[in-house]
Length: 80
Figure 1 (tube, rainbow, N blue to C red):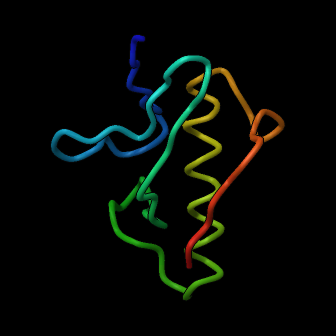
Figure 2: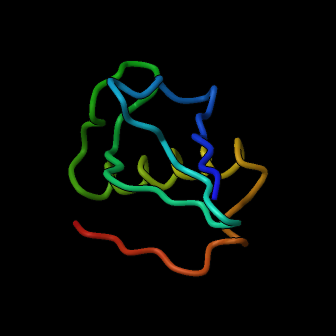
């Protein structure tokens, strides 16, 4: 089964051997997302609410790069 790294041009490129997401067998897998502002490369200020909102904007950008949207998400495990 092939694996395809998904990278959004709207976000900062991943550091090291990491990917923003991996597409495998019709599924898209994310992990370790943080509230990083792509313009500054830093975690957004404003606490957990601002960081969580930024994470979901970043996830949306990666979904878009994969030709998907949150309408295609069947499960999300969120750990705050």
